[in-house]
Amino acid sequence: ILPMITGSLCLALFAICIGWPLAIGLVMWRLCEQKPVFRQMARFCGWLIRFMSAVPTVVYGFAAAFLLTPAVRQLLGGSGMCLFSAGVMLVLLVLPSICLVLETALSPRLEKLCPWGLALGFSRLDLLVHFVLPASIRALVSAGLLGFGRALGDTLIPLMLAGNAPA
View 1 (cartoon, rainbow, N blue to C red):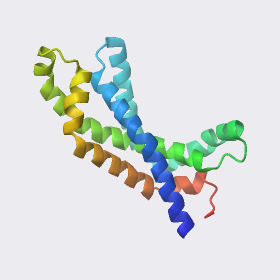
View 2 (cartoon, rainbow, N blue to C red; view 1 turned 120 degrees about the horizontal axis):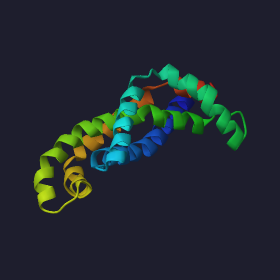
View 3 (cartoon, rainbow, N blue to C red; view 1 turned 45 degrees about the horizontal axis):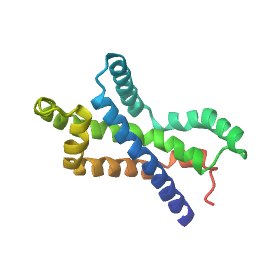
View 4 (tube, one colour; view 1 turned 120 degrees about the vertical axis):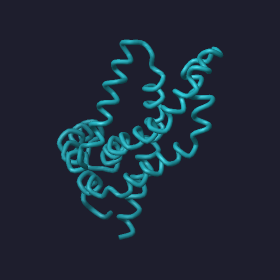
């Protein structure tokens, strides 16, 4: 069982190291975008994140087995069922959870500071980077831990995509 535990830990670390910064960037973009064209894209991205959070893990696993694995097979060779394939799919699995926690925590704080901050000449991005993020360390850590726990606890994707072997 030690190889399985080690593989799950490595996979969860890979997923959180890629997914957590990606989620922070995505939430910052969604909260700071003000141009009408990009605002529509940000709304669609928010809808897509909420939709992705409702998709069961089995669907992620089957989609990865039929879509991601052949692409990895062509690009990297081998069977395509490897740690990389499973890690990429776990990043997509944990990203919605992390984004939703971060957006729920950061949005009210940013909206509370916006009238005064904008009057002082700060942009929404300045307010977010210099005031909201430093005051939201607990939310950042909570989102990271939730994503790590989801990646670690999800055993179906490694089973389906990492070769189905305890080696």
